[in-house]
Length: 274
Length: 366
Image 1 (cartoon, chains in turn brown, green):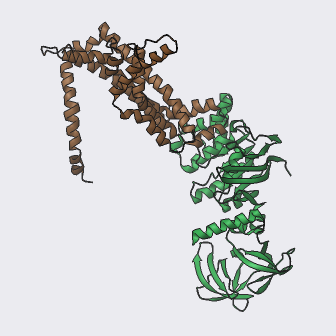
Image 2: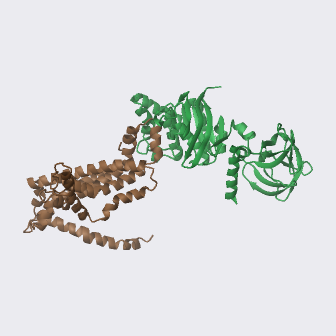
């Protein structure tokens, strides 16, 4: 194969990556390590240790963690049920489950807002039934509901793919060797689905951690995730340097989690995780 | 005679509208090597899965050592299975695979370690403890699958076409291995295959199945030499199956010519199927032949030639012989009386099904 020719074919992608990923990233880094007068400083990066920023980061991690966990708890049993069901066309089920993704996600979050707000549809029904209305809008709970609703398909798809790929005869072999349902789950199904769960976590945890739109709409602007603070530094405070510094910190966190979950994924492929 | 270990009574099973096993009765004795033999779709694998507990029969009962185990799930049965595609746990080492059943039974570590060593020795793979299944060849994976099953000391080992995915040479080696294993372990083997040679080589008893019915049960010699019907004769080895008329005891008429045979008990002038194995047709000089014919084709098969001879009584025989007869040459044909196998024409429902199968096969061939 002519290497020069194949290299030539990659030019558009290289241009794209350089123009829209590398150069903007360099700008972000440049802003992050300078103050507004342009002198070099670590201040914007170390600003994460300010109590407001630290609290926002911890809340971001916490909500992202809870959302990922709930997504697993919903997706995994669902995947097992779909696998066990006699439905022959499992792709159709997958299709139905990702169908909400076809709608704009802000619309979906606004719909959630309509459902759970103080004068929302759910509270309306509760009042009709004589039950006292709940107040979950503008709380972290509301944000978690939004995140789970939004990112569930990103967990479900890799998990479902992984679970469906587990051969039936391996499950039968374990039963044959004396495994009850619990053994089958803990010794066969879970270890063999780790790679799917791993990539699911990456796909849910990372966007949840950097989230700010859901927090804006469902948190009522009262709950500050790190994403919200960064957004405000850029759009309200116009302190791009601080915004960039916090972005870099967040990026490092995201990178760390990706590496951790990425390792689980590749290890389970090699079969070292039991 | 050893006692009956497994008894199947009046088993029927269908998937949707497809009746796979129909009112089947079968017992299997202790320490027997039993082979369920038949074409694909004959119900042999389903029968094995019913014994293993992976399928529930629609009606009928399964007895194990006198106890009804029809409703018992697989993990509570004293049988272990070797699957066609090995079904090794790819996320575990060889040792962990073998230890799987023992760990569930909460055996202590020393016992498990000793068992792993013993099992790996038994299947000729000592030192493979820490390998991953993916790094093994097909034959090695199958040996590990066998080791994984036998460490649990099952009374019965079920084998579902375990050699199907292996190449010919390896398959033959593994056949000897399995016979050795069976003798060393002294347990019952129930073996499913569609390969008649495998069945003849390894089995104490062969159960020939077709379309959910048992066609014949017997030793390999019985099945080969005394097939009960044309299906068995055709499925076990190659055969000339010819229409004939039983003139009287010990005399059969084929193509207008009377041949001596050794079969008795047929009605006079009854229409019968006559089976002659290709290796039992003797070719020689024209003068020495009871009938004569002309060689139509000859194919070299390694050990022997396969020759088609069109005889002067209008029947084309398939012949296997180590001698070379050129195409077009005239030969004499002899078959000794012992080598005619006379069978009633199919009448019962079971046998009609066999004929339907033949018809389907003919359609495919045409």
